[in-house]
Length: 386
Image (tube, rainbow, N blue to C red):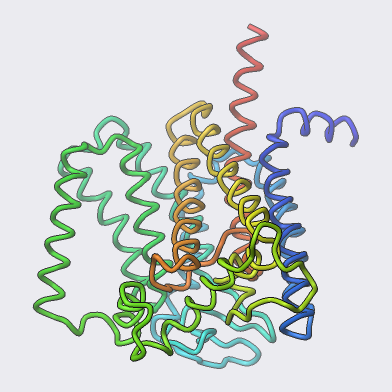
């Protein structure tokens, strides 16, 4: 038993695992502070702790499974993941015993959740992992031929279909993450620079024309959230800008070391435990705490790319790029929301925001990266023996 553990610890990327564990530990401490100073309950911190421990265990288990086998098993995880997502397109707050399908967790038109007893679960998080695996496998099958019209068309269908489904589900933030992850994976697999430039110009022009012809395509609150970034002091948008204004104020008044955790002297920010946990943390721990969080997340992103570089094959590279893209995009969008430079679209900060399903699924992504890393170490060991 100890011999197996010793061999595993020699092969696994302990730096990567430790970075994730530190992020989770810091998240639990901050959520304990929020629980005591704002919520009057430590439930958020307890769920986060349990999810983090479970996630770490699953990451270790996932890391011992060959990522190539996981990718080839796409009919299983794709059917499970999308089989959970699709019912939420048609059933909204539908109760079946102790399960609620299409639960509206945030009081908006986002019916992307399941409620099981007192717990909630977002199947789109599981679908995100399945998408990274299936899209990486697709890219591997057309390796070197990505820019051929037929292959590119099929890849774009593979990319757009899940993003459209999640959009219909009502979770536009996650739909944008799906879209971004797929595009970054496609670009890393060799998509032509000319095609990228042309697509960006076409998207910008098409978006402008669409907004002109169909100005009501955005829901009322979505359009107001965009305006709130451009005109944060507009009194007519006070109800929309309140959260972001409070978040920006909390970050700006944190100083060097902050107001301190558990003091109760923090600027109140709505939903501080979720999308705006960075604003609370920066207010409580100051510039030093905010810089620490940014350094940890940047280190995770860079370590993921380093594993992609060391990958023994193209499939492993695509998987790592997909995990990097999901981690990076969620960090950029969430921090942009907190800093009032991007509209609020309900994207959490990886490892930090409260949410059992998002934490566990993030650790499953960590397990994929560790699997690639372990296989790279094995290949290097074989070469040294030969």
